[in-house]
Length: 147
Image (cartoon, rainbow, N blue to C red; front, side, top):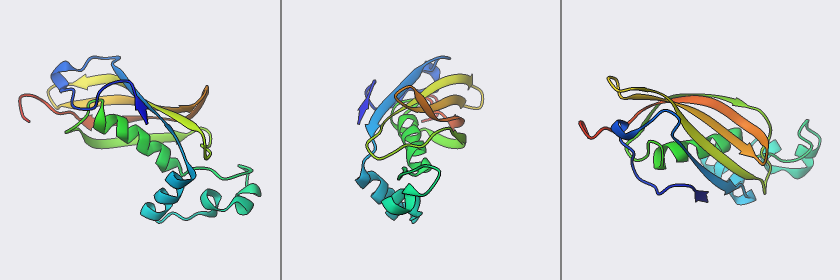
């Protein structure tokens, strides 16, 4: 996994509108198998080549929430980072992610409510130039005043 910034914490006092962080990860067969095991989602479109070939996807795809988990990794590790609490997330899945795809998950600060320590984040994931996931998250950001 590659990211563009060191892991850690950016306190709300240091956040700025437009600040962005990302990571990239190749989604492997093992990732899909492990996600199926942990989530108990064993839908054959994720695990069975012959079954998946006869679906609208014409082949196996990764779980959408596995891709969404990469967004969570950016939020929890980079922006705002350690100490961040997820309050909400909306997602729209735009295109499938397949085994072997390199996913770029990116988070950008859209709004900051210092009084409530709330930060609104744009959340995107892409494979090459194809947007595969878009959404918005609201998080409780760490603060030097309280943490």
